[in-house]
Length: 434
Image (cartoon, rainbow, N blue to C red; front, side):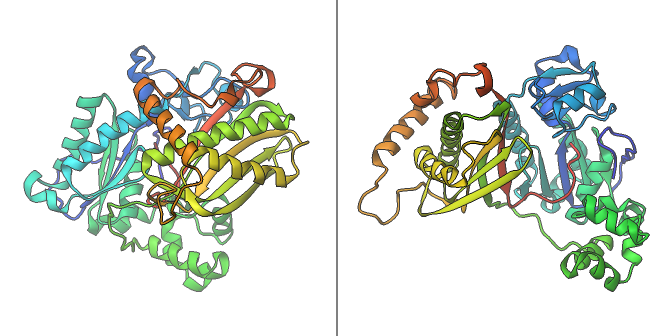
């Protein structure tokens, strides 16, 4: 697999009529960073890091120029700035990323109705039906990349192959701003020389185990006896690795995705000892989760609390509700009780998060019950939704969050880094290439 700084890049530069590569994996290049550079064109070609300039923050994204210094997403900002002191740090703007994601995804929909979205900046496309109208996979991919750049100023990389796994691998090898076509007949010649880390599901520990067996390439895994793989990583994982090593991947591009969870978490700029501060943050996060659930037409049954203490011990606790809900206040009431039951009120807290799982379509309170115990809160929160839509998401906030000491910049209560936390059934395992 290519490195995230673009080294080892391979592309298909000569037009080909190869028709077997009908599965596309389209991945936006350094998406968050590239969107920010639309407003800062003077910074193109420079090492730019997206995130909050705080020792407790993490890197949201980085341009390829910054990656050459070893800066990658999810890295602590302090480490990133030590590796690349000249990096320019820009604050993230998630509403911008969502806007441009919708614009780009609509272009994918114009090519084929078979689009499987994998989060905000990548998707699988099955272009079988488009070949008769638009030409070869090479022609379709070339035109799609041209259109994305012409209409947005952003770049994408496309891998085209006969299976989803190889298409995704090809797009990572083509980065940045490249196209790689892998004909079906050449799949194993492309796949087998790749390092074992190219296989989905091979993380650090699995890689260490396989290297200990002398397996360094995908071809080595393909040639290894199944019994050897099973003894090393277990029956299910062993069978999966051997199948992928032989490019056996029968999954189709599916247009429906099931969101598994919706959540937000925040890392405080300084460890928090005051439980009231933690409770107010739980209220703020619960409110945001409720807003996102209602916007997506979803409700959840399981409330999950995440806490990380100053010694980096992380705990998660959950509670399943009798009825699903999409209300921030109900989420808060439940997660606050879960927090109280942890006994962590007198420990220093580094991170806190709220997540809803067990999602289903439809808002809470709309079932067969004769009345809704949360009627008053539902009316209040839906009214706030309407006002936020009209005047902006930051114009309204629960009154209890305006107490002295809770505003940004007020000593130990200032938030250092906040990230949405989502789970999508369409997301593929493996390393992100951006």
